[in-house]
Length: 204
Image (cartoon, rainbow, N blue to C red; front, side):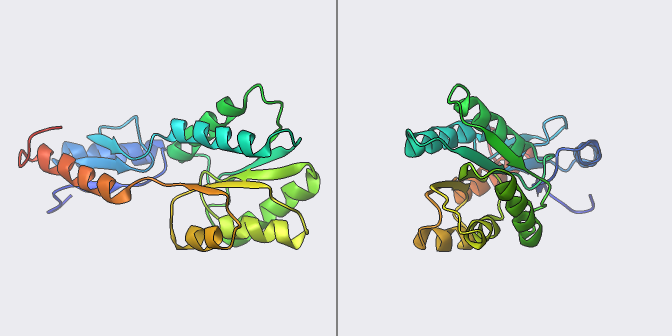
């Protein structure tokens, strides 16, 4: 609160976080949520990808690439209280509705590779029909390791964000596609929102 011109925040959508955002805004510090929203707060704006639309896009790609192959789809969530991941999941499920494909969910890995690998291994052993993955969060290297340790093929793997891990997995042919948002454009917009709150720029 002391001396901040603004806060750009990626955080879980929980009442305690919303309360903290509200306290900041009430003290005169504008808050912009980034990548994942805390919608029930006094934040000035959300800047980031259309998460629901991204989930629907992922569902379209998975279904198209699997074609006639009967296959269940694994969805890996790092934590169910991230609104962005939740919106991607809802979009994905709505996009696959009517396809007849089973969706198997693993969650609460907190993005920790060892935890995610254990959860995915367990899901693969319980569901031998899984042949595709949608990862709204992360931990993709661990998911690939789980498939490989069981000698299982992953026919389609859709992930998010072109970070170092995902670049390496793409080059190795382990990911089918990465849905990427222009993070620099988002960062510029977030700063513009904060400057507009201080009347240094016109509001967009």
